[in-house]
Image (cartoon, rainbow, N blue to C red):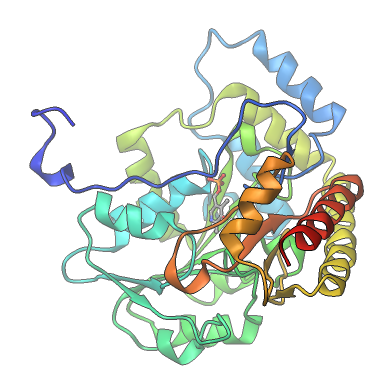
Length: 354
Ligand SMILES: *Cc1c(COP(=O)(O)O)cnc(C)c1O
């Protein structure tokens, strides 16, 4: 740290992204990307746009917002395109939390929420998940705080049903409820339609997971027009050109060929099911995941040791050094072939250490 850094950021502990290793031939199951590359039509659209990189992109993102709005069944004025959904989450902390209105989220959830709270100087409260790592909906009703819930949650993958989300939103009419639907396409129920009923609901989605564009950085916020106006005020006050030309073109093309997304999601759910069974046969226990990852532990083998032994075999998963979940590993659902290598590696590791 230099001696010039503002007092207000001296204690900021940044988010630690999952490792993005440079080693080739690594089976990368640590950051929940899609194992399927973007469709050729999407790559072609981005390539074509590369020839216009000397010009600023459209700050209104109109073509992209229209296509996305049509896809999720809302008006273009009810969506905002952002540079990865991390950006909209930051805007939500900026816009809807302060000393009077703290943020509220589970103790075990997406690690960025507490970082954004700190960055924006916002007080926050973390509510412990239950012993079975579930959200207790009662904890989020009528709370007088800005609620942040990932649904399905990360890293557990456990989803809340739509009725429960609606109850939480309805019980907090004077506070914003942010529902982070990063993993919704893998088996959750989206609450987007509720934005027409509740002016306090903001939904966030991303193209990083189900739509194979993690490297393009594209996400969306969906809410009533007044909320989207607030968020656009912040966007135009930070970076009006937040979506670059190639990503914008790739996003539009992805939505045009969205049956590919649906097929990829079906494959991932099938592979999740099969992999879960194979892991259970090896003695692993896991949460009931509706996401593109499995959150697993073995009653007889240490979580960190399994992580390290997998890494020695060039299989990279995510381990969190947090007290309640340090026995677990989060494993992204990859291709069938990747999962076969994972299972074979775990079999060998268990034979070695048990
Ligand atoms: C991956 C993820 C995001 C954001 O991803 P972006 O790449 O910034 O769109 C947001 N929330 C959760 C829970 C995630 O896992």
